[in-house]
Amino acid sequence: MNTIIKFIIALILGTTTIYAQQDTAASLQDIQVTITDIASDEGMLYVGLYNSETTFLSKRYKGTRSKIKDGKVVVIFKDIPEGTYAVSVFHDENSNQKLDTNFMGIPKEDTGCSNNAKGFMSAPKWKDAKFILAGTATNLQITM
Image 1: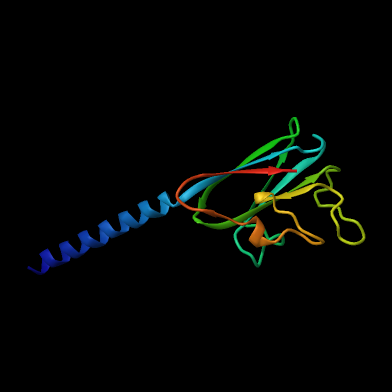
Image 2: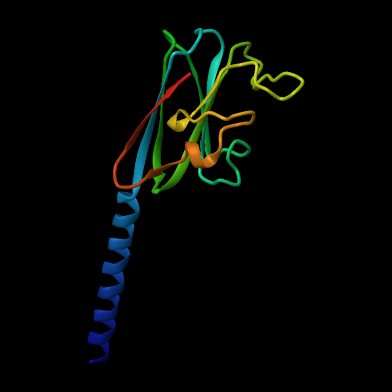
């Protein structure tokens, strides 16, 4: 009798673990970001994915860079958990691996954000750039 109870408990725990692993795998999606109207193919395009309002534009959750071809770049962030995110991009035309700004901190190089969010006298806001990743892969379009 004691062996049967232990067997049933082990069976229940094993089944729960399998379903938990399947749910985790199912909740991961890809985010494809297509950036168009880039002024030139010179330099690199840096793309940052942010998962928090408090770290938006300061600390990326994931990031990548890409060469530009014919004024366009497509990047894919793979296996991203469901949640709220924002994307920012900048065109490092002179390949110095940073966003160049003037003495007032205004970017000299082109920038963009998800939802084509723009800032007025400041950087774009999280609330304007955020999007929700839930259930399916997401395709974003950013126009520089």
